[in-house]
Image (tube, rainbow, N blue to C red; front, side, top):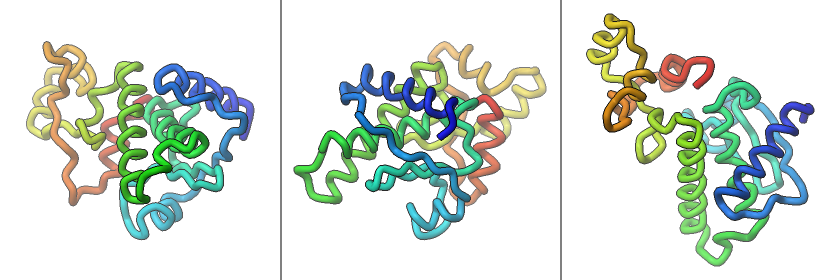
Length: 185
């Protein structure tokens, strides 16, 4: 891990400690960037929208297209995986069956990923199940014609909600992630 990533991970562990109560671990996981196809094979055994994967051997695998050192959404994926690391290190959920423990770990990691994004003013990018949101095409064209971006529309909404709908299941999610999040999330 280079110096910038080491500093980022240290800062994220402080954030995790403050917001979750998990102790800052004595050791840090190895972070490895790999091709998306390799990540799919590890996490899903087929095509899927996985961006990170925690291996209990203290390794976090991230999609090599993520830039957590410069992109907030990529940092949120890293936070999600670091939460899995501290869960494992603390023994949290170890008294449950494998399936129940997995569900509880995922629920907690998703929750704190959303808290992290909300803390940075980016909660409107995801629905309650942390699925990426995409603007309704008609609404998107109207706003674009008026010179308003999706993020600005959500920030100016009286409810703070994005004029969005869940990404279509059949669409190429990678293109939608790139188009909606942009380079800075």
